[in-house]
Amino acid sequence: MEMDFDHTYADYLSDKEVKAITELEQKIGKRLLAYYTPPAASNLDEATLAEIQQLEKKLCVRLVAYETH
Image 1: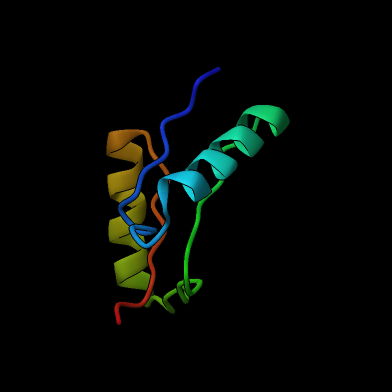
Image 2: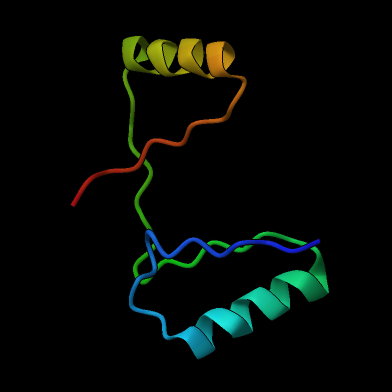
């Protein structure tokens, strides 16, 4: 299965480095996310978490909240 690498959060990678990640993805059959600095997960209050969960159900997706820099 061909996977498209998204440069959104790893725009500092060269084409050669992206190719290495893509090749490993193909070899292991898993999608990899590349971060220069791993994002910190947010601590959410119950109301905010409920809003996120409601949108997850509506869109049939999983959302992850990270702290902004």
